[in-house]
Image (cartoon, rainbow, N blue to C red; front, side, top):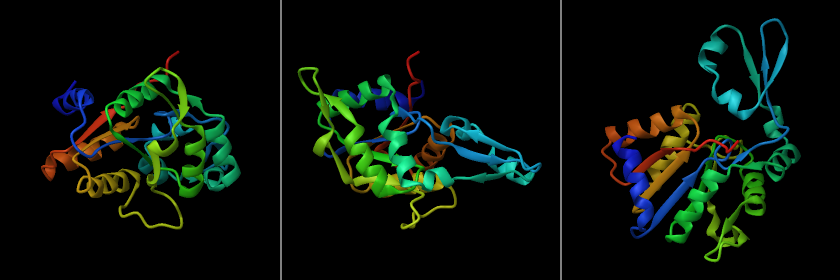
Length: 216
C-alpha cells in the first residue's frame, strides 16, 4: 500500500470539514448485467465485452490494428437502466461506502458511462446503505444529483481527450470545492491518471484508491 492509499484508509476515521467519497459504478459498486460493448474485428466478427473486459483492453493498440468498438447498448436508456437495476452489488466497496457515510462524508458518482440523467435516476433507486442500526436503507438524499457525473453524456461536454483525462478533470474541479476527496475506481489507468495529477499539481486533498474485488 502506497502513502496515498494509506492516507485514504486513515481518512475514514474522521471527516475533515466538507468531505467527498467519489465512486465509480461498473466493477466498483456493481457488476452490470446484460449490457456489452461490441468489439468489431477487421474480419467483421463481433465480440461482446463486459465493462470489466473492456477496461482490460488496450483500445489504442486495438484500434490501430483495425478494431472498432460500438457503445450502442450504453446509449439505450432502457438497457442502461436495467443493467443497473439488475446489477450485482459488490459488497466490499459498499461496506467501505457505509463507513464513510457514518463518518459524515458526502457521496458522489463518477462513471465513464453516458446518459447522465438515466444513471442518476437508476443509481438513486438502486443504491442502498446501512444505517446506524445496520438496517439497509435507500441512499436517499445522501446521493445528490449535482455529484453524479457520467463523463460520456452526449448532452454535456466534459473536458478531456479520453475517459482517464475526463475523470481527472472532474476531480481536479471538485478538489476546489471539498476539503478532502477519496476516489475509488477499479481501473488502474484511471487511478494512475488521478495520482499523476495529484503529484504533478501538488493537490493535497485528493486520495485515489483501488476498488476491492467482488466477493466470490
